[in-house]
Image (cartoon, rainbow, N blue to C red):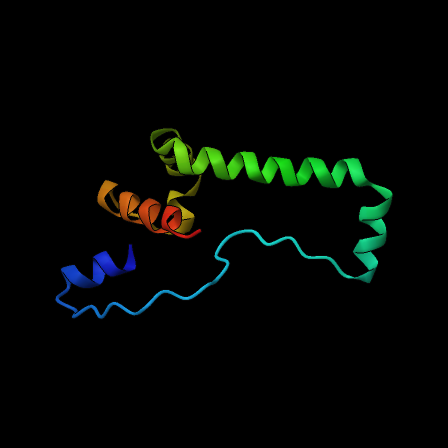
Length: 96
């Protein structure tokens, strides 16, 4: 989305090689939370399954995903039109 806006303003875009990064939700644990996870294994597994289901939904149901995001995230993400929404979606789904 930012790249799209920059191009419209005449900026020259340089493509760089991709780097392995995590751009979404990351699950981590510390000594404190390890004890919680060990004592609440069912809840921890349910959380992981929910994240997997949400990721699958996001990556396979573009129209539904965009409808939800437009309704709840337009102001927060400052996305101004469908072209920017499509750019945002394509960027997010391109990450592994």
